[in-house]
Image (cartoon, rainbow, N blue to C red; front, side):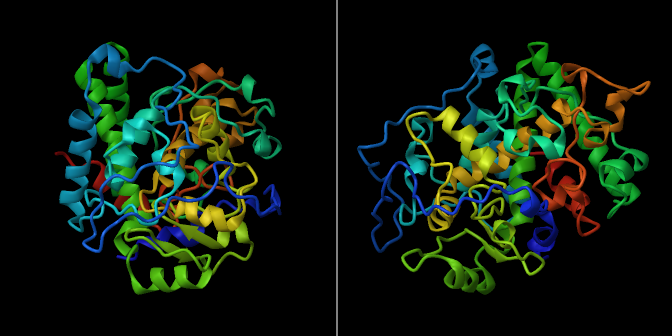
Length: 401
C-alpha cells in the first residue's frame, strides 16, 4: 500500500493565507548537534548543547496522571507501540534511532531522556497534548472566523470535548461531499468515537482505567496515522532521492524519515512534505501554530517563528522526530480549536447548531473528519482523500492489545 495516498491531497491549501517569511533565520537556539554515533549504529544519548536550558514541558494544568498514579510509559505508550507494531510488523515505531541527524529540539524535554524511538516520541506528545491549551491560530482567524486574539479561545485538548457522532449525512457536510467513506468505514469511525466518548467519560469521572484506555486509543491512532502518512514508505528509494534533491547539502536523511514531493502542489508551503506527519518547510504555513505552541510550552528552548526553509528541513527531518511528533498531535488540538471557537456554523459539526444558533464553545462536540476546505485539517487520511483512508486508519486504531 502506498502510504502517501493521502499526501497529495492532505495539504489544506494555505497558499492564499500563508504568512510566508523570507528570512533565512535559523533556530534561535543555534547550531545543530554533531553526530555522535559509532559505526555500529549505536544510539547512545548525546550530550545536548549547553546553551539549551532543558526542562519538562511547561504544561498548563495538573495532569490526570498524577491523580491516577499512571506510569504513561508502561501503562499506555508501550502497549500502543506494541499493538500498532503487531499490526504493521515493519519495526518503525519501536526501533531505536541514531543521534546522527538529531536536532536541538530533540533534547529540550528532560522527560524524553533515553527515549529513542518514534513510538515513544508520539506517545509522549499525546500525553503533553492531553492538557488544555489555547491554540495560537490568530494568523488564520479571518479565514475560519475565529478570534484573532488567542486569549479569547476556549481551550482544547485530546479529551476536552466529546466527539460528534458521524453518519453519512454529517460526513457529507463536514467532508464537503467529497470522497465519502462507505458504510463499513463509517461504522468503524463511529466505533472509534463511541470508545473515545466512553473512555473520556470514565476518565473525567475519576476512573484510572478509563484514562489509560483513552491515552492508548489516542496513542494507537496517532501511531497508525504516522504509518498511513509516511512510515510504510519512509525508507523507499523515492523518499531517499527526494531528500537528496531538495534537502540542504549538509543534511542526510535519517532512517525512517520520509520525504515526499507532492506533484499536485506548486507553492513551497505545500510541495515538500517531511517526516512522521508530513509537514512542509515554510514556517509561516501549516507549521506556524505548532511553532508558537511549542514556544509557549518550552520557553527556554525556542524555535524562531520565521525559521528559514533549510532549518525547517532539519527540524522536521531530525532523526528523533520530536517536533514532527509534537506538531502532528498538536494539530488535532488546532483542528478542535477551530470547531469550538468559530462563529461560522459551516466550520463546525452540524450537531453544534441548534435552532439556528451555535452552542457555546464548552458545550460543542468535535470531529476528526473535516475537509480542509471546511475546517482546519492537515491530514488527508482523516479527510478520506483516497476514498478508503478513513477505513484504513480506523481499522488499525481499533486494534486491541
